[in-house]
Amino acid sequence: MDSSVSANTKKCPHCGQWSGWNLHYEDRCTHCGELLDPQAYRSAARRAEEERKDEKAPKVFIQIHPNDGTFTRAWKYVVLSGQVLFAAIISFFVWLGVVLAG
Amino acid sequence: MAGRSASGLKYVGRYLPELRHPLFVGATGLYGLYKLTRFFHWVTLPAWVTAYLADLACMPVLLTLTLVVQRRLTRNLAFTFPDSWLVAAWLYVAVVFELLMPHWSARYVHDPLDVIAYAIGTLAFRYWLNHLIKQF
Image (cartoon, rainbow over all chains, first blue to last red; front, top):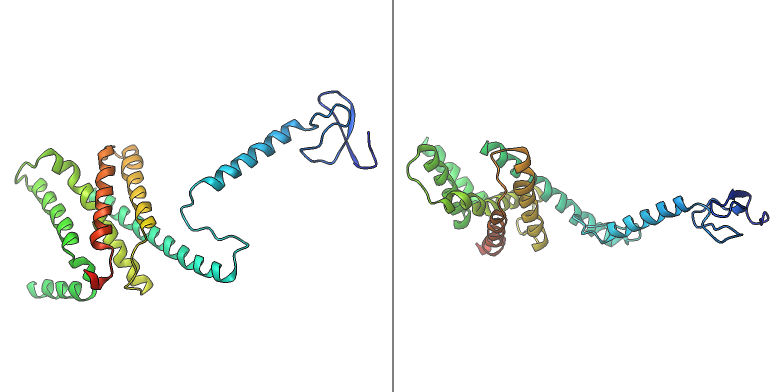
């Protein structure tokens, strides 16, 4: 066990030895090299996969990113407000059509 | 009464020129006529008319009314819908009327051909109605 690197220790679920642990899901046992917290690793991998899928999914409204410049943010806000207004008006008329049609 | 309706038409002609377009007038007129014939049992219309007329007329009417309101609210009479918005509107209407409404109400029936009718209506709006007012 390398106590100079990690203040925490965790018992390895594979070899049963105590190992230094930085509370990180990728930490591995210093004895057998297996993951110390395989469940947290699987959860993190699943989250990463969901985020990757979410990035690939088509976006309904224009995306404003934190690193966009001031000018880019300004025109994106104009487009976004137009898109939201369009969605609201068309939803109103769809609702009105449904109500009037009975 | 006649004077009031004439002044109403003048108002539409002057301030809402989008609503004078032959495609919009034709779509709303045909749908109105269809509703009247059904209500009064005047004539028996062919099945394809009763099944798809409303779906064909839906998008030109819906998008024209939306364009009229959006132009007035944003005070930009030159505004036209980008193609991506038209695709979004077509998908939105198709999902609402062909997937969601048949689950909620027995009056609505899922029919894949309706989606094609909405697409034809959207294309008709795109080519004949989605223009600057001067270009009508």
